[in-house]
Length: 83
Image (tube, rainbow, N blue to C red):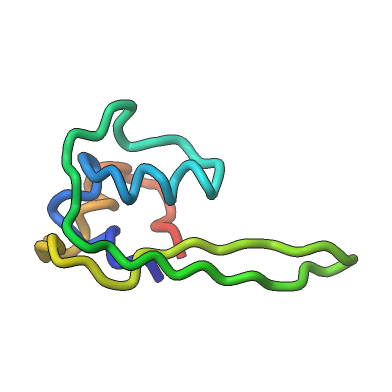
């Protein structure tokens, strides 16, 4: 799971914006203005049922991570938190 969902900067973060783009989901911000320090993005390639491959992107570590549990959910009430 991406640590960003529980980070104070999730809606302003350029790294999370890139993850959103890779997942093809709506952005929390169209113009993120926060550049995180040393984000580590984990990319997993997996086989999909019926053939083909899928890619999963997750930020697993970041020097700028500032805990704010539930931040993503408060920004998108009623929506499922991304896995």
